[in-house]
Image (cartoon, rainbow, N blue to C red):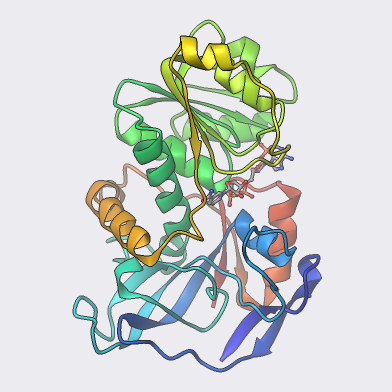
Length: 322
Ligand SMILES: NC(=O)c1ccc[n+]([C@@H]2O[C@H](COP(=O)([O-])OP(=O)(O)OC[C@H]3O[C@@H](n4cnc5c(N)ncnc54)[C@H](OP(=O)(O)O)[C@@H]3O)[C@@H](O)[C@H]2O)c1
């Protein structure tokens, strides 16, 4: 089968189409004929050889999410049968004509959603559900601050939080991105290139911050939290180290937490898939949550998709069509 292989750690050009052996499903797995694969920032880190714990990346096929049709099921799989349309969360291997995945990490393609739209869901929806709602414990009526509001993660966090009765404020790097965030449901989006988000939001404060920036944002984020507020890290693009006032954390009973999805156990991801199906999937069929696909690329142009993602000019998700 055709797949996109990381030939060595490096720039987008190291992503090359190659013929590789088709994977075979283990007893607990399904083989999916991939129609579309989502592109995510962690794929870029993997390609660069910077994804913590990924080891030697040469020869790996990236891709954390796909949508397609079940082609074959392992002997222990009862939920799915050949012909079922599914989308799935993977640890790798999505940029390919076929992929194998634990059957418990698949969900049905939501009614009315195209394959490309469904492929844009698993990585961001699973990440946001776990970090904002399970770790961050965001409640209806509370306010969430989302940094990188126009990212794949951002458009997901804004829409899910709004659909579940929460208020959302966001930050993004241009006025156009800010407008897009507000159209998706953010009550306010701050262009961090022209305004200081900490100053702008200080008077009201927020209950939960979803942060992918780190560095000097950390003290500002903590300063914005109301009593019992929660700061949740999903990345630290401006730096993993930060200084903050521990007395402030104690005085206002703040929680600092975070997680990375890819290295979690298969059982954890299965439980998360079940929670997402219960709480998020009904919102998708209701269209309370809409896909935001910036651009689709043919599979063989994965390198161009990475270039665009790294330029940060996109709003929403990039998808590879297989
Ligand atoms: N922990 C997890 O399990 C997990 C899972 C998935 C994703 N993530 C992380 O979540 C983030 C979003 O992922 P994604 O796939 O949605 O990516 P994405 O669409 O590429 O979005 C990344 C966003 O980050 C902003 N950005 C880029 N460089 C930056 C910098 N140096 N400082 C501050 N902001 C910067 C850009 O927005 P502006 O132009 O507005 O700055 C861009 O929209 C990534 O950092 C990714 O690694 C974590």
